[in-house]
Image 1 (cartoon, rainbow, N blue to C red):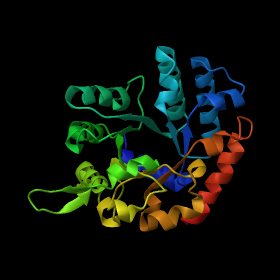
Image 2 (image 1 turned 180 degrees about the vertical axis):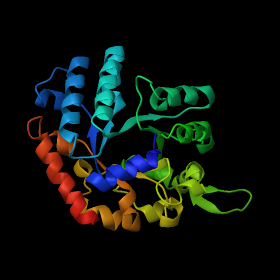
Image 3 (image 1 turned 90 degrees about the horizontal axis):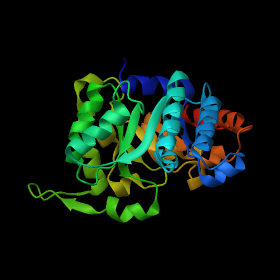
Image 4 (image 1 turned 60 degrees about the horizontal axis):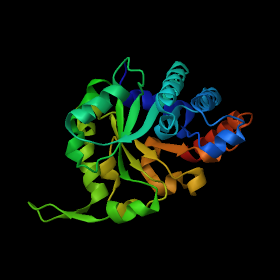
Amino acid sequence: MTSFGHRLRAALDAHGPLCLGIDPHLALLSEWGLDATAAGVREFGLRAVDAAAGRAGIVKPQVSFFERFGSAGFAALEDVLAASRAAGLVTIADAKRGDIGTTMEGYADAWLAAGSALEADAVTVSPYLGPDSLRDTLAAAVRADKGVFVLAATSNPEAAAVQTALTVDVASADGQTVAQRVARDATWPNRSAAFDDGLGPIGLVIGATVDRAECGLADELLAHTPILAPGFGAQGAQPSDLRSVFGALAPNVIASESRSLLSAGPDRLADAITARADEYRSVRG
């Protein structure tokens, strides 16, 4: 298997940065004429995959919308992930798991192990039990040629107070933001010489609506790091903002949109993806 970074770079180069978030909100299920059941979210997800295939390179199912239906919902998600892989899409399971020790090992096995029913190319994780709590998970991703996206500076406004708060390194007395500390401590695998010519396996979630300077997330800190960027579409950021927000890092950005595209409905979703992907490609250059 090729590395996650190589698979992601190939998808970005071929299709541009657009990532379709597969988020079957109850309101969207109703708009699509689907029942609020496991069968409904399965059909929603499979239609979204069909619309994305060949038009975008990346999909990101939001796990919670499937999980709400229990074991049948997880079975639906398994089918959506399998269909995504079969269609050649890079899959990011938006699970936001975060724990310690063997619990994180279990999550890593569930989402990243080859042959797992929930196997994805990458998974989102939370570092707020301490970035070091993720070390074994990050190492497991590297060994499996998979990816992990660590929450660093998210697009929800209520996160700013925590993620921009200053920490103090007792040894050096240097202050840094929480987001900066997460980025520094989580992306250590990317600094391996093995990734000098491309993207590493450990990405960061950095919202397109946040001030990177305020968060302490300078370009040099993010070298070889994939960036999963929520905040585009319904949350306000537009394709034209890609370069102004991310600058030289724009080629490494995954621009995640869900409601802004899914609200087009099942019959017009493919056209909406095509048009939006063209917008991103035109500004990325």
